[in-house]
Length: 306
Image (cartoon, rainbow, N blue to C red; front, side, top):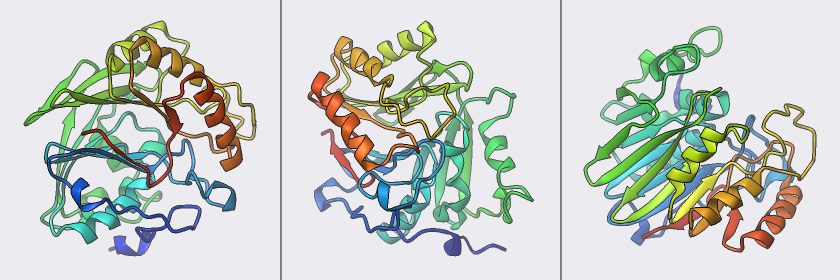
């Protein structure tokens, strides 16, 4: 059996190979706060190297501590780093993991999520049916089959509770409410709004800007949110030439949504693998020129909502 501990990065190192302080102040640990922490902010593929130190190279993973619950949004390579961190923080781990869709940059960290191999831990895993009809359980199982991976999902000794959801689902976890909408018909991607005690965080990171319905759904989801996490740093979602360095981007759509929805803070996420730190600095400067209360997500960044 594969030793999962041998295939994970140290919990304080990102894929650029540089230390990151991921520790929360004591008053922001799991409890009565509403806290968002970024563990992976990159899209498509991990980007290790000296040119991505400041923003980080791990793919999408965001942790939300809210109402005594731990929510995890997407399972890119940042999930591996989060997993080792959790093992040092608590003897028993329980979390609700929400997948937007099953492109590799959203699921590739799941086989390396060490807490899932530990008996006594519990994970509730939510996701929509993929375009090929596969459930979230089937998608996560398939990527761990030979010859892709040496250890099958069935070797995970934690309790895994898979829940199939769809656009329009409303999930209540005690007093935390998670609403879902469709953002992209081509990928079956969902957007999430997490609400607790009158505060809301919206995670909308695979929007098809060519679809009016997707934009209308996003506008509904983002209305008066405290934070909108948005996929605004790709030059063109339909352009798969990742070497293209164009800074002409759909982030302008994110600003339009944030303004129209009266969003308090806009966080751009899902950074293009072709964009190094200097390119992202330039993008952030342009964005803040149009929407001062906006910034780009960075690995290790913490937002305290309440």
